[in-house]
Image 1: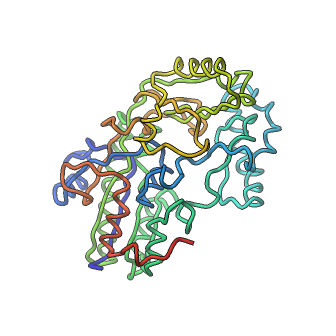
Image 2: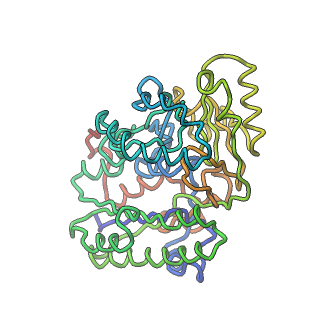
Image 3: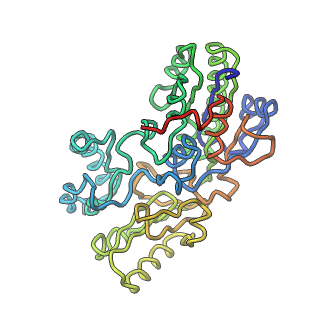
Length: 394
C-alpha cells in the first residue's frame, strides 16, 4: 500500500455549490485533483450509505429503506393496539406520543428482540403490525448487508480503519478524533452532515444555509489537514452523496390516513418524495381508487417495471412496496413517516435531475460523472486489496 486513504463525505453538497467564494477549499481541491459530478441513487441516506459501503446497488444487496413491510415478523405488532391514538387532534401530538414511546417502550422491545435500534418514526399506530426495521444491527457491523462492506474487507485484510461521524462527535469532537487516529490507520471515513441538516431545516436559499456551507467547507479543510498531520502523506477523496432541491410545494395525503380500507386491504408508506403502496386483495376498484388519490395529491408518476430495473430497485418480494409513486422535484410530502419538521429542501428525487447531483473530488477525471458504487472499488484499489485476499463476511 502506498499510503493511508481518507474518504470525506460532505453530505448534500450540490455540484454547483463549488466556487471560489462559497466553498474556497473544495474549489481549490477540485481544481487540483479533478472535480466530477456524483450521480445519486433514488433513495435516502441509509440506502446511499449501503451503496457506498458495499459498492453495490440496492437490488444487489437487497437493502433500500430503513423500515420495510414485514407483517410476519415485526416486533411492533403489540403496539398496534394503540390505534385510537391516530385520532389525536393535530400532527404534533401524534408525533410527540410516538417520540415518547420510541424513547421508552420501543427501546425495551428492541433490547428484548435483538435490535440495536428501533423507532416508531411517524408510522400510523394502526399499521404498526405491518412494518419492521429492515436491519437489526448497524450496517457497518460485519456481515449485515447482502454483500461485504468496505469495512468487512479491510478487517479481513488486516488493515486498521476508522469511521468518524460528525452527528455523534460534534465538530470539535470530530477534529479531536482525527488528531487521535492510530498512526497505523490505513483508511479513515469521515462523515460531515451539516450541509444536509441546514438544507432541510433552513432551505438552500437562506443566509443560515450559506453560513453553514462556508463553515463546512472550512471543516473539510481542517479534517484533511489534520489527517495529513497525523497519518503522513495520504490520498484524500472528498465527495457528497447527493444534491438538494428547494421545496416549493408541500403535499399531504389525509385521504390515505383516513381511508376505511387502511390498513386491512391496503397499506401505504409516505416518504418525503415517494408514496409506496401495498395491496392485500386483488380488487381493481380499490387499486384504481388509491392510485387516483395518490396521483391527485402531488405531481409525479408511478414508476414502471422498466424504470425500477433501471434504478436498481427491482426486488424479489414486497418489502419496499407493490407500487412506488415518485414525486416531481421541488414538491415534498409532509406529514410523512420520517421527517419531524416540514422540509424546506429535499433530495431523493429522480437521480437524472441535475439538482440531485453531488460532487466527487479525487474519484474520477474532471467533468466525469461518478456513481456511488464506484467508491468502494476505488478504495480497495488504492489500498491494494484484492477480492481473492478476503474471507467472506461473517
